Length: 105
Image (tube, rainbow, N blue to C red):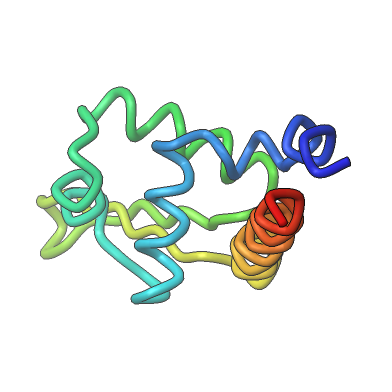
């Protein structure tokens, strides 16, 4: 039943903020923290929290460094596991949607 499959979808990826982050990174591979904040509309704290969860799951890698020894810069990169998780998420969602559409016939 496709409705049961919806309940089992990857909730780490499915959460809207994390889905936005992963899709933005899938499009550009690597992004600065402030760029991701602008793209997703999340606050700094909210973005940091979601990035921590994604990093813990090995879906993104985070690099914190200084530019010209003074300016902190954080870059985020999607990992191969993160790219696969996004691709699988959309593939599963499309399959579930197709199954639901076929029930209408």
